[in-house]
Structures are given as C-alpha cells and as structure tokens.
Amino acid sequence: MSVQKVPNIKPSKPSKVVIAAVYFLYVAVLIRTLTNPNIRMRLPIYLALEFIYLLLFTLVLWRSPQRIIWRQLYFVVQSGLVLTLICLRPRFDFVAILNVLLSLQAALVFSDWVRWTWVGTIALFTCLPLMIGLGALQGLALALMPMTIAIIFAAYAAVIQEIEVGSRKRQTLLAELEEAHQNLTVSASQAEALSAIQERDRLARELHDSVSQTIFSISLVTRAAQLLLERDPQRMRPLLENLKGMTQSTLAEMRGLIAQMRPPEAGSAGRPTP
Image 1 (cartoon, rainbow, N blue to C red):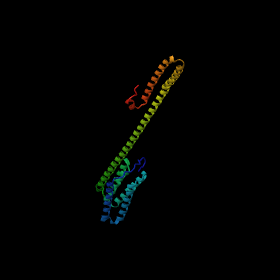
Image 2: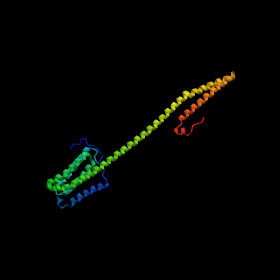
Image 3: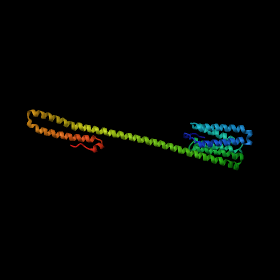
Image 4: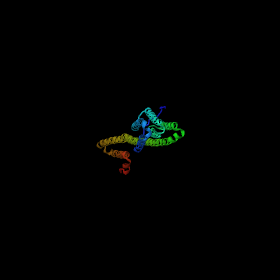
C-alpha cells in the first residue's frame, strides 16, 4: 500500500464513553473466548493473540505514532492478528468484532481517502475468511453485522474529526481577525499621532514665518518710537497707530493658530473673545 502524499494529521481522541464501549466490546470477545467449550485446545493461542491485539490497540489509542509509515504498519499487524484468529476456526465468528474496533481506530488515526481505504480493507478481511471457511452465503450473513457496525463507527469518528478540524479552523480564523483588528487599531493610532505631529509642525512653521516676523517688526517700531520720543515727539502718533495695528493683527493671528492647535472638543467649547 502506497504511503505517498498522506496528510500527517493529528489523531483524534475518542470520548470516555466511546473508550468504555470499545473496551466493553473487547471484554465481550474475551468472555466468549473463555466460555467457548470448543476452543479449549487452542485457548492459549487465542488468548495470546487477543492480548497482543489489546496491547497494541491501547498503545496506539493513547499515543499514536507520528509517522504515517508506522501507523500503516500497525494496521497491517493488527489486521493480520484478527485474520489469523478468524482463520483458526471460522465458526468462531465473534472474533470479527475486533475488526469493528480496528475500523474505529483507523477512522481516528487517518483522514480522507486513507481512512476509508483502511475501513474497506478491514471489512474485506472480515468478510472473505468467513465466506471461504463457511461458504459464501453463510459467511456473508455472519460478516454483515460486524461490517455494518464497523462502517457506522468509522463514520461517527470521521464526523467527530471534521467537527474538531472545523473548530480549530474557526479558532485560528478568530485569532487572525483579532490580531488584524489590533494591528488596524495600532495603525490608526499611529496615523492619528503622525497627523497631529505634522499639523503641529505646520503650525510651528506658520508661527515662525508670520507671527515671529511680525513681533520682530513690532520690536523695531517700538525702538523707533523710543528714539522719536526723545527727538521729535510730534511724529509719535503715526508710529503708535502702526504699532497698534500690528499688535492687533498679531494677536488675531495668534488666536487663530491657538484655536487650530486645540482638540475639536476644546475648540468648539469656546473661543477667546477679542
């Protein structure tokens, strides 16, 4: 059987109820083996093979191999064990129940076409030995029940696995959406901060280019007025009028720049009155 391009999925873990049912079925097979009077001569062989089956089944149930090739090899060995038990005495068809457990495990360990390939193979290993040993009709009749239960168990496990995969995908998508939202929030905050910095830089340039130059002109006019006060007081009036106009103009421009620097709430709450 080819093992190329097989998805290495994480095996699903059955619920406690399913595990209890699985071991209950195994115990039923064991009791049938111990109480069957026609099996006493081969009882040690049956018990040994059933014990090996239980040991391997339990190991893989609780800790499945990570590599696909080892999983494939496990099912080859287990199928061989059950096939041997059936072939020892086909009339003891109750051992075919072990293939039901194996089908469930195949559905838990594998996915997609690999899962159903193994389920079909196990069903074939259940049907053919009974048909060969007991006759086609009788063997098929005895094999139908365990084959049907095996398929139902496998379908149940497949549905549970798909639900788990869908849940993991939704959780991953939700985490990605939350991360994207956080990134957008951070980006929006950074863009807002950058916009505020750029606006302050623009206002600072305007303040430097206009208001500071006007204030410098006011200082020059004030110095000229001081000189005229000593030499020609009659020429003071025009200078003072000019100084008054520049001062009012500068004050209005300063108010406008300060209003632009305020937040919208502060700016709309009230502006200084002239």
